[in-house]
Length: 135
Image (tube, rainbow, N blue to C red; front, side, top):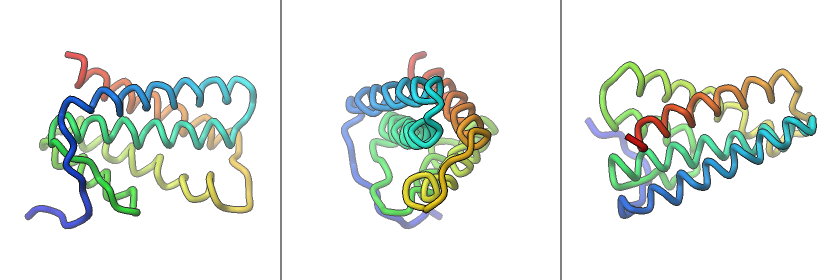
């Protein structure tokens, strides 16, 4: 059964734009992290993950998630194919996205340990995506 949520059809050739966006966000996340800007680092790493997920979905499915619940993007990502790598990385997306609301909207600031973990997960996810798209 196909999951029901909002998606948008996107021409496969545009996956490169999403991948470039992911790379730029990751670069900004690393730069912010090196400057001890934990909030900016976390936010940019989260957006790197979202863009990289979109790149994979556009490349393999010709669509991306377009709803408000970003966790559904991980569900769409899992429909690319059944594999342990896809499941592992879908779980990584969910773990990263769990921090999105707190990092962007809540009163408290991101701790260094949280920024470290988000950046590491984002880097691993981006490496996986690059490995799948740049074969």
